[in-house]
Length: 192
Image 1 (cartoon, helix red, strand yellow):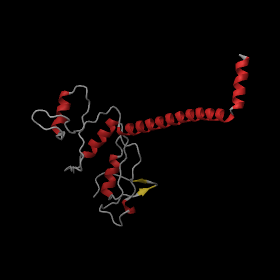
Image 2 (tube, rainbow, N blue to C red; image 1 turned 135 degrees about the horizontal axis):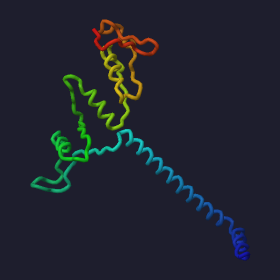
Image 3 (cartoon, rainbow, N blue to C red; image 1 turned 90 degrees about the vertical axis):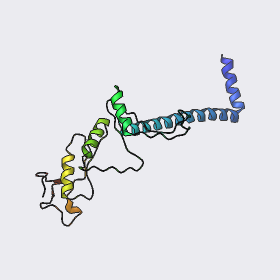
Image 4 (cartoon, rainbow, N blue to C red; image 1 turned 180 degrees about the vertical axis):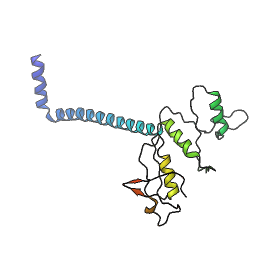
């Protein structure tokens, strides 16, 4: 055993450049593996964080294109999901607790009574998405509504509820909403 160790050191001394390059190559390979593993872990954690912002226990389904010809229809036909598909999922799927249709493709949605605020709040609470409420160019009426909406349990981030006088010289309400000590005073929602 002693002779083998002596021979190793003699070979290292005799071939200094080759020995150095071999050790450098091993070290470079180990460092590369560590860096690649750390980078992959960083990407995994980043993707996990982005997905958690979307919500928890969520499945998203959207239409696409058919890959094969079936039933007299051509392959590559576009499939769009409709509100009837949402109702069918609600009716026929016992393991799905909530079905929430989402509109995309630049669709315009307007509510006659602007009642969608509470539905959006409930959807975000269901998905575990934190919310804030506010607007930059609100009059006294809008500010009063924002303050009342922001008291719902899902609103966890502070909102922009400053006085309307920051934006407008004259408000449209008879009794302007003014901030005192950093907090607007709201006596009732029945502003005139």
